[in-house]
Length: 112
Image 1 (cartoon, rainbow, N blue to C red):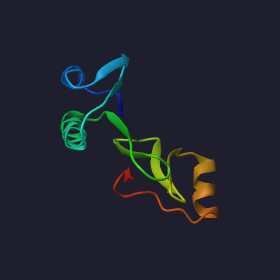
Image 2: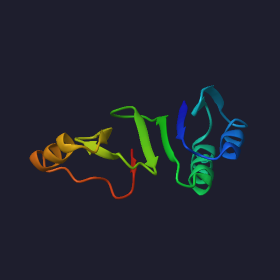
Image 3: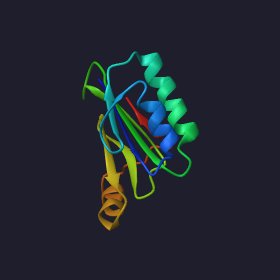
């Protein structure tokens, strides 16, 4: 299962994704596609996102059972918390937690 969440992207990108995935509400698309198609949809979305934001999550064997990647996040960041991918909101508490737990934000926002 693949889920893509889009925010502030061009309408044409939404239309292109709806050819492969089912829109379940504004900006949220789900479907079952191969890993090749998943990666091609990611490349397409990133290329056409402009200043928008994209999050992609998919089933994957092992712990935690899903992969996650993000593009264009401005007020949050993708982190790996002991093998668990999470999206952390960048606020004062985030800064304190990053320091306390010696976490490093992902430079390439993809966690598998």
